[in-house]
Length: 510
Image (tube, rainbow, N blue to C red; front, side):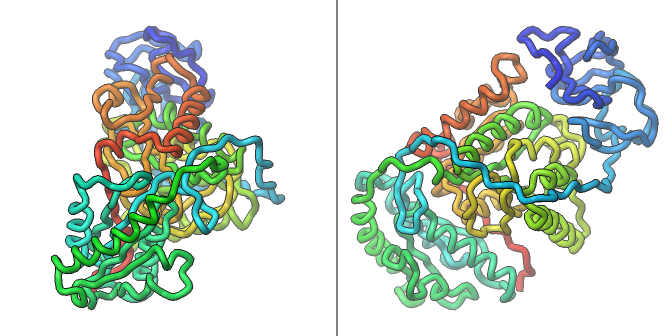
């Protein structure tokens, strides 16, 4: 960031110039029309009122000329844009770019593990670590969703044993009417990841009995946690009420086991942090996302794992990740995610630029290119070690990527199923979301959102734009909070009871 941001807005700091080649700057505060600015020594008088987070042209931009932010192209001027004009969807055209990929020529080593701190967590038999200790009740299909919810609700108000965080349900609308093949495989991978998650002490899988997604798939002999997994169906248990009572008996047995599990010191290298953003605004790529990127780099240094997600929100910025890939194979896996997603969208006559929501645009983001360039900052600067498909078990230390949609609840579900035991979520517009068994840390990109939704927000990265903090300082603050939350400190989303869970259905409804 090339501007000296101080508390008081002035001609020199009311607009943020992010890169020397950028022909736009971002309004740090609302700027009235007729305001004289001095951006990097360039005098500019605003012709239009520029809302906070929106772009102002620093010099005349000809029709068809590339508009740059972060030193990268974010589209072309659809008309002549005079210096001082507001630059947004009305005069900035989206264009799918032909990007030049700089593939790694050699193998980059996995970062050498630095001295690492510890956190207080739950050691699991498979070597992973839990940051929470839940009993999960998972529906195999929509037909068992209500029963799963009723089971979890029946424990509300009951005094649970120590060391047990709760009994939580995983209802959803899938599991039947599926074609066998990739769609059913993905659902089963997702539900298996939830059942066997390190934040889950034990689980029950509930089915109706005749659905496509049969519970027997999850109850095979030889499962490493078979003694901590039970399965029932409504048809064989006597209907809804009888199944609720039978499930409660199974959970009673599991609660006794969970009560004996205690938090113990665990190396912080066992942390697997999901990186997600939702309700993004123009400040996301200036404050919260680069600060979270600092935290991601700190985790990589100690041999922990961070997992960037949301394939639509790396589109147009994937060349920056390709350049950081550990080897050519990892780079090609990443580009394969882009190609696969593009084909997926084409089947519905969609485009990556359908991604920015009205709220994103109101927050100053004009198109998916601009959004993605800010979104990838969550991944810091570390080497991209590996790439995973949706809900695939994440096993590599360091910075990684998972192929998920940009839709927040579906993305978080994939990260959870892949084994993330914490999630950090940046938001500019104030997305209120959580997950049944995983603490979600909310990081506000601007102070206005933080103040309006203070009950939902754990960190105010807007202090960076206010001039009250630096990106590295907030990044270290997030890192410290990750360790504290891993040790049991509850997040705002947990205190509010947010438990969103939405699997990604990719196939037809039969």
